[in-house]
Image (cartoon, rainbow, N blue to C red):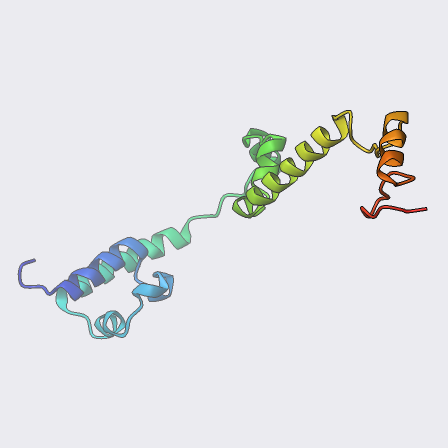
Length: 153
């Protein structure tokens, strides 16, 4: 084995693993060098190829077993169940992108909750007797309107 080069060792390993037919090898392993060694093999590769072809012939003569008709049902019944949460999380949603949106939505909700629960929410100043007296003493006849302007009569 010391006199073989690494490419020859790799071809022997591929033949022993995947068989004599190069079409059955992984596509990444089907380089021109490997295929050239199959077309003009060294004595070591010829021995391994002969053994692999013999094994392929024996395996090809074996009958293919028919699967049981209820095999898909048995496989699915023994498959692990996913919870609803796992199905939702595994649905491919972009979770990192939803975190800022969730934070913004939470702050909006808390702001509305606090704003609407305060007693002064939605009330405008109304004119009381004290205000009328004060404004009359200053020369104004009414409270400032919503734009902050004073009305003089």
